[in-house]
Amino acid sequence: MWRRSFSTGAAASRALTGKKFDALVIGGGHNGLTAAAYLARAGLSVAVLELNRSEISKFSSRDAEAYPSDFMDLLLAPASKVLNNWFEAEVLKATLGTDAIIGTTGSVHTPGSGYVLLHHVMGETDGDRGVWSYVEGGMGSVSLAISKAAKEAGAHILTNAEVSQLIVNDSGATSGVVLADGTEILSSMVLSNATPYKTFMELVPNNVLPDEFTSNLKHSDYSSATTKINLAVDELPKFESCKLSHPDAGPQHMGTIHIGSERMEEIDSACQDAVNGIPSRRPVIEMTIPSVLDKTISPPGKHVINLFVQYTPYKPSDGSWSDPAYRESFAQRCFSLIDEFAPGFSSSIIGYDMLTPPDLEREIGLTGGNIFHGAMGLDSLFLMRPVKGWSSYRTPVQGLYLCGSGTHPGGGVMGAPGRNAANVVLQDFKRR
Image 1: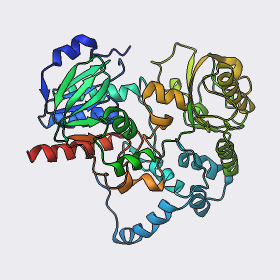
Image 2: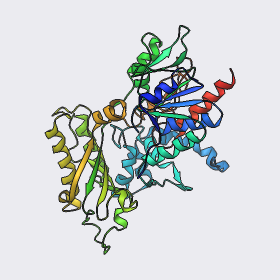
Image 3: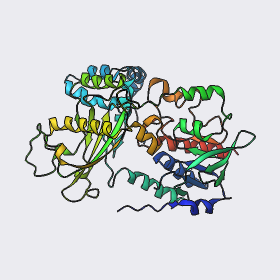
Image 4: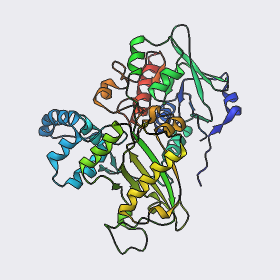
C-alpha cells in the first residue's frame, strides 16, 4: 500500500507562517512537482501547496531540409489527411486517429488535429518511440516519485493547503499567497500549476492584469468532451474477435483496446453528436486493463478497467450530468457498446466511478474539464500558449510564473512545462 508522507493540515501551514521561501508552487501535479524538484536541486528554498490530501534527436541533413515543409503539413492538416496519405486500411487509420482527438472537442477532420496526433505519439519509453507505458501502482506513483526527489532536495510539500489568493504588492509584484484558512506564505516567486484561467481569474486580485491579457484569457478555449470511467470487474472481457486459448489474461488484454472506432467516419459521427449538444450515441472508447500487468491494484481474480470516453459535452442539451439517472444512462450506453464486442461485459461489473467534464473541473481543478489545461488547437500552441505574447512562462504579474500544461508544450504526463518553467525562474533568480 502506498502511503503519503506529505505534511498536511493547519499545523503544517502554521509551521510555515512567517517563513519566506525563494519560490512557491501552487498545485502538486506532476509539472508542479517537477518544477519544485529542479528549483530545490538548484538550491532554492521551495514549498509546494497542494489543495488535495494527497538526449536531443539528431537529423540527417536531408531530413533537416525536409522537416519544415513536412512539419507545416502535419501542423495544419486534419489527422484524416495525414493518415490517408500514409495508410490504406480503414480500421488502422481509425485506430491511430483516436490519438488525434484525445481530450478535444474536435474530429479527425478538424484542421490541426494532425498535430494533436503527433503530440501523442512523439514520446518514448526506454528509447522506444511512440510507446506508452503503465506505472506500477497507478499514475499517482509518478507524482510520488517526483515528490520524493523534490523532498530529498529540500522542498516542502503541503497537502490540504488550498491557495485562495495571490498576494500582489503596490508595485505589481507578488510577495506570496494566502491559503483558504487565512495563512500567508511569503515568497517573491510563485509558480502556478493550476490552469491559466483559474490562476488569473480566481487567484490574482482584481484590476491587476492588463485588459488585453484578461480578454484573451477569457476567450481561450477550455472546452472538453472527455469522460473517464473506472471500473472494478470480476472477470476479464471475452472479446468475440480474439478467442485465444489463454485461461485468463492474454495479449488481447495488454494494450489499448479501441471500441466504437473501426472507421474514421464513426469517430466523426460521434463528434457531430457532441457538436449538436448531446453525448455520442456510439461513443469512442479506449479501454485499458492495468491490473493485467499490475497485480498490486486489485484482489486475485478481480480486475480494474479504465475507459477513456468521447464525446461528452460539458453542458448537454438533453439533460444534466448532475442528474443521477442521466449519468447512469450514459454509463450503460458505454457498457452496452462494449457488450457488442465482449458479450457479458456488463454483467461482470462490480462497481464503477465516472468523471464527466464538470466532475473533472470540480474534483481536479481542470477548467471546463479540459485535461490539457486548455485546447491544443492551432490558436493555442507554441507562441500562443497560453495566450499571445506570454509563452515564456512569465506573466504580467512580476514574480508569478505558469508551470502547468497550459504552457508550452502542452498536455500529457511528461513534466516538460514544469522543467521549462523552472529554468526560466532560475534565470530570473540569478539576475537578482
